[in-house]
Amino acid sequence: MKKLLSRMVFTLTLVVSTLSFGHGYAAEKQEKLLYKAEMKSEKELRKDALAGKKDYDFKKIKIQLRDEKGNVVKDLTEHSYYTVQKLKETQVGQQVISDYVVYAVSDPSDYDQRDRDNNSGLNFQQTVWMWTSIIKQNGIDMWGKATRYEARWDLLDRNGLTIQSGEFNAKAAGYSKSSGKLVSNSDPKLYTPPAWGQSYIKLLSWDYIRMDDNLGGFGARLKTSYTARSSTGTIYSTVSVGNIGW
Image 1 (cartoon, rainbow, N blue to C red):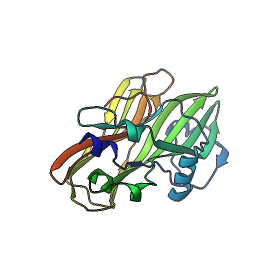
Image 2 (spheres, one colour):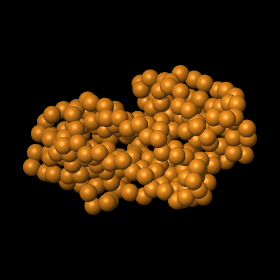
Image 3 (cartoon, rainbow, N blue to C red):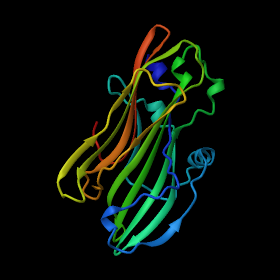
Image 4 (cartoon, helix red, strand yellow):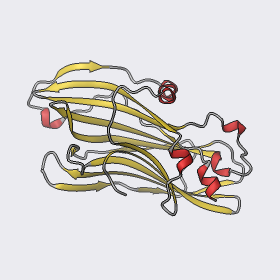
């Protein structure tokens, strides 16, 4: 079972559309557009991830996989790659608001060379999209949030594999920008099972979370329970920015 989990293909993707998301707190102040770019295709983002290209270096980004016992699946976590593309930047007073796309992937390029009969967990992959907004003040990431998440499970090779259930959860915790209070938001949704190739979407209206105090963060997690022939297992796949617990 440990071998199965450690060889599992996992894809985390985080993308941003060209839709304009309003920053309500700044409605009364004039926004100055500093930068805008079209979102790259998933193929281009994947290429950038494998090349290690990043428009911005998030200091506390984490891409991690754990098994049902809470152990980190090191082989995949250590071979996960991500890229950051800046899509938009505006200035409102002394604050700069930046929107990014972060694409994270565990590289499955040698999939055809693997022994799929002995590693049925290789037969599916998971994809996550996340829209993010960061408010910088004096060059420091002060506040952050995700405004939209999207998840998808894809079947690569049926070969004795059944997904029993998939839980798609989004979470944000820390001090709220508008209220100053400590908050903890989550939005779990269970699919029994999720449909192959279907995108599941979360549109969130949660407030910005303080990011410079080592307390706040946001992210998404997929919990996938599956059967590979006679073996059963659960894998937890997370991507997060800042500090957040599950």
